[in-house]
Each structure stands twice: as C-alpha cells, then as structure tokens.
Image 1 (tube, rainbow, N blue to C red):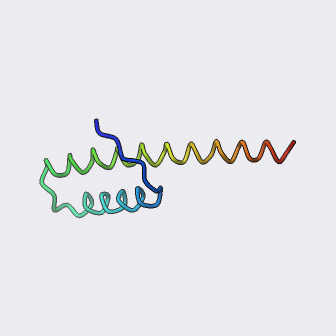
Image 2 (cartoon, rainbow, N blue to C red):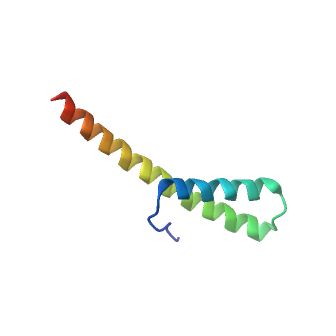
Length: 67
C-alpha cells in the first residue's frame, strides 16, 4: 500500500476533506469509490501519525517546563 509523502498536516486534511466530499457526492463509479476510499485511509493514517508526533512533542515540552 502506498504512503502519503511527508507534507503539511493542513494539506493532508484538505485532500481528505475533498476525498470525503467526492465519496459523499455519489457520482463516482464503484471502482473510483474504492480507489478514493483507499486514498482516504492513507490520508487518515498520515494525519494520525502527524498528530501523534505533535502530541509527543507537546508532552516533552510540558515535562521540560514542569521540571
């Protein structure tokens, strides 16, 4: 399965929103819907990884300021 190249979180989120709208629109063929769904899942994984990394950075910063 392909991965999403490293890029700004906001860019990933924007593409994910467009993908969801296209799926909700109902105009895609079954095959195109499956392809869009797969891409959406890749984007979700990428966004979740980015959020996890940000959360860890915040935890580290919080610990440093607490000590």
